[in-house]
Image (cartoon, rainbow, N blue to C red; front, side, top):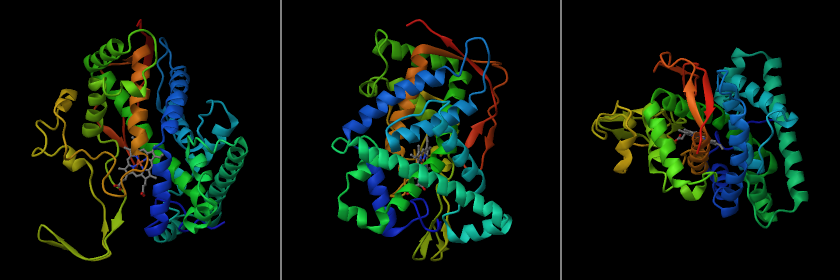
Length: 376
Ligand code: HEM
């Protein structure tokens, strides 16, 4: 199988536009959001079972599995059980590709990558991608049999809902869509995991912020009902806390690189055509001309909405294609965890602010934590 030029991340022009439209549209239906909410409620319950009130646990592995499940809900409409065979297959393939072949789709990087790896290693990555395409094909066939075309609540259903002629377009061929799905898993793997872990880290580091979040949740969601999408506007302090972590901790620092077609001049510097541009998403988020005391973690700063300088998901047409859902997902995951559990660090004196760079995202240094049930 050749994977050159397939998928969304390394595509341009018509192919990129069509895949971007399909993925964004699939997230916009009310049925998508309802299904997301339903599946995430289960996801939170299962994720919390990985933790205990008495034994401290490192959250990393569970959070990686949870990331795979978030993308699986978006794509297939369903999460997997943590011990499910299908999740094991997905995990091992994504991990392998992530470690060994992130830039496989791009020809020039593919060749420099080839120089570093033997032919059999290259074949192995392509083999893993091939396996994933087979997995997607099976899922697509199952979806077609389930006949849920009328109310699509995931990407595969939205794809099946396209007309015959739309699917004849090469940009929306099965193998292109399957590779875009692989791209989604790869794009989410470190970014979403690092973001969840970072939010939890700040809640451990700032127990007063955690307490205020929980108080707000209990006040708004009187009784034991789970937090829902409709509560989003009412839980302003939790929303502000999530935003403030994304601003100050910048789990994802760099946008994906772009090339420019024509030469341009920026502040007196000439940038020639075909230059590769990589911009730093962190800089505007801590720019003292845009933010008061930018180095201070202060969720209350969001009481006055900020328009400029907040770009954790990138900007422009190539902004993160998962962003509309991720905003919702982070909210539902964090609120539903905090509603039921107090997050307690194993050692509160050992939560250093230094971060570890994975090559894609910034993670806190490893830590362990307890989850203690709270009365509500
Ligand atoms: C909190 C979690 C996430 C953060 C902070 C994040 C951030 C980003 C950023 C900064 C970019 C580059 C944007 C640019 O170049 O301007 C990006 C691209 C992308 N993200 Fe995310 N992302 C997250 C989660 C996800 C998830 C869950 C998915 C998949 C479902 C996803 C799919 C993608 C894809 C496919 C691209 C490439 C888009 C393109 O090439 O047009 N991301 N993301």
